[in-house]
Image (cartoon, rainbow, N blue to C red; front, top):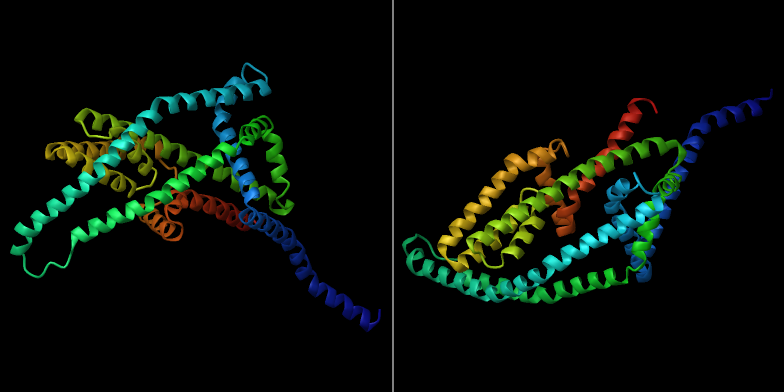
Length: 363
């Protein structure tokens, strides 16, 4: 064997690990690039973004109808079971809308009518504090609360059109999502087929670990979201019922708001409790005392009885980490960061856990 042949083989032996590594990294890189290109096209092209919205909406409907379809499949064929599940879900949603939405709209109008009165009361209360208490305190009054209240009122009035436009845009998207129910039927009927086809997008080398990570994500996020939504429903219902009994105006709106804010861990109840105190105070100081006692009582019941039973081990996160995640999410993405920072962290943790476990096992 000549020296040149021997040298060429040695050179190839040295380069072969690098070539193998490049081949292994090529498919994941191409997959990530393709997904990024699709996301960029969907963001740039408005029609495609609407189509993407319809696909997501159809997947969510199928996810909600899946437990109902599983019950029907014990007695009926799958196509009929899926259709019956979607009809059951649509009937339940229509009943809830017909029962609560008209009352909710009426109480929203009541809340809008009471808002100027509450702002005037706050200004009057601050004027009394300025005239009776602040002169007795050392130092100068450097806080102009009247100006802050006026700015808050101007901000609310300025943001209201944007909020209404956003709601109108969402309603418009929902109204144009005619294809979503059709997609949800096929997603529900052929769910195993779609799951298998999606798994083929994952490179074979990483498929087993990635599917395991997705199962962990589905289990942990499912437990967390189901627990959070059920807790929010119970807390919102108890708050609305209690506010109705003590005579707080707009009790249904305030109960719904408290239920929505309950989805945000730790700081959500504080956000939802402030409007309750203001509306209770607009009626009488005694109503404020009762509303404060009610809110604290419901939160204690949620923290000591409801949440421990439903959320035990759902996230396994220390409260400090939860607060840090919520703060970082709100700073980066606003309200969406508050809502989705915990589920996003659970997904990342599931992926990291499975891949690090695979490295330790030599997979």
